[in-house]
Image (cartoon, rainbow, N blue to C red; front, side):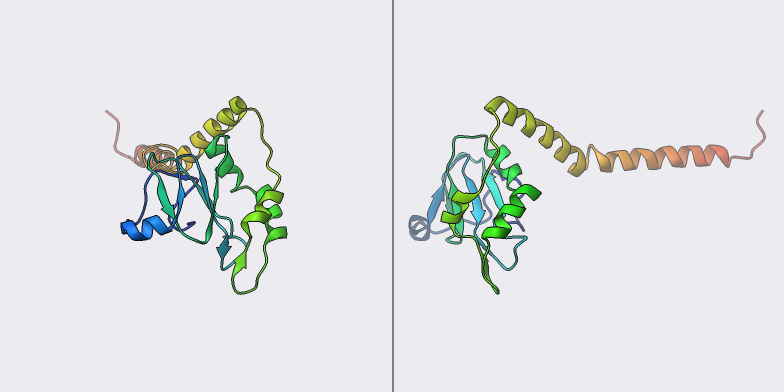
Length: 163
């Protein structure tokens, strides 16, 4: 999951036959899909909030978290250091690291009121947009500063006599 998805997704990466789909677990809009096995502690419990409209099939090595909270808020939380410290205590295994879905019930999640969850998600979404967008944010700022630098460099190094 962590190699394909971020905090949320609305797109699937693979289509299955109807037979395989019917035998799979399913997630619906706003569910959190969490990988419960990995090769390392860092990647176990990687998750994404499914925001697509359709029901989707999910791999067997996942937990599907149904809830009544802001899905993006939960997904952002599951990417925090606070969550990492908790899952680290629950993870077991050597070659394959696992956190069993029933152990996830022991995780403590701070849940502010819905309005506050929405406000936090809005801030984090804007920050994510600014830090990853190629058209705005940091890349655009770097490009603007580069152009500004080139402009002033050329002006400062233009030794033609002024008329």
